[in-house]
Length: 601
Image (cartoon, rainbow, N blue to C red; front, side):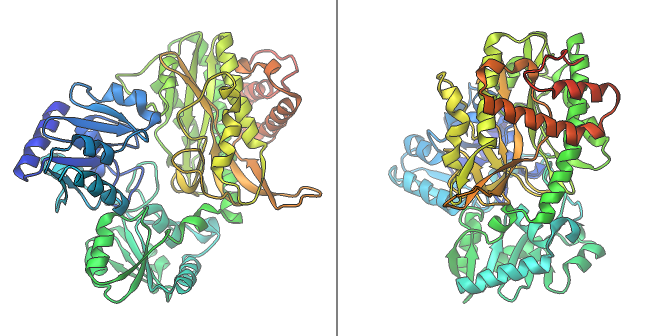
């Protein structure tokens, strides 16, 4: 089945065999993961879309693909508009589209292991207006027509030692047990892969770019737990680490275990647990307590050990990125560099640390107009050269056992035009405004978002993505619940210990993209005379900004002082890790803004 057109046709034939008039294909797995293993990449296989968020609906005579503002350009490049209509989220949703397009009295299929119960409820309500029915399938019809579908990973789990987690698995389970007692519940279901990895202090290799293992868990009020994972993924070392308080079962035993919890009161997260989990529990006679996964917030609030590990990873990663930026300053002006060569070189610098476990996501290496594609991924087909007079955007990160990094820098190749400098400086001003923010405890990320956008708004400009996302501790590079955004989240109160990204941007379609990203740690602020408990941010990422793109005349004295102080910290932290020409380049790249310096060689 060579073409995407053939695959769409085959799915329609399979749906007809099953007497279904449509089917919904989300980009997730049975754990509601953002990044998924190859076996769960159904949307990519069916449509060609390579983004990390989206869904599709297939009907007999039409089909639609749904993506948010990050993928507006990408989806049009990767998915054939002759066969798929492009739908924008949150302006519409799969449920709303089905209400308008599903055939009257039709039967629309869905996989209950790939959707939340709230989605099921919304879709059922939308279809009811058409006299149509939402039908749960026993097996996924995409899998039935996918001849070379990858098998789930068989990689073994590994122990994440207490000296890097700062808290033992037994202590974390005891905290969950106390929480359950307070909730008057017997057990809590953990289905999010990063929650399981964090709770049991294990990591895995089952999902690219995220060190987690395919598993489910049920933690009980006596602090014991049942872990459902393929037996051949557990070696003696991991079994010893888990101890007698954790009973091991095959992953396939999870659903029967849910159905056997009659008479138990079970806490389940409606945002992170799929509809099939609720159905199995309710069908088995359990009493459900719908509430947030009890480890989501503790996982987000990093302890002192996790923070120290993260800072060590950032210092190491900042040096690798600075070596790359120096290399780029030498090689890019010569011509001949392209996006793939550059991203490979950056990965090589990270690998030279000897401690890189993986990238934290596929590097976004965008030259010229490709930089305007927010979540662009270079390929042999799209690969562009870094041309004189253009901008190059590189958003990248590493997974190290002591921390997860995520950083974006935008570089001028040759001489930038005045508009590029204006836009970059507006983005930088917003970035600095977030970094310098001081706010009362209880403030939500959404309340801070305008700080990053104000200078773009003043010129009638904006960007179609959030300003900041949470980051895990050698876990997911996108971690909730905290965000800095006015849409798609951002209503979680920020707390000391939470790590977020600070990444405003600007994108001019067909020409260039700009983004500046550091990671920041939420910290308590001691302010003389303060009448409230206050919080602020400590910047964790250290690499130079692009001097050639900074219009110093647009900055005020406070912004100049902050950037100069930041660059001084870059020299202090990164400088000792560099030598030779790279060290000299760093000194020039981080010199005070009002100091006349020779352009970095």
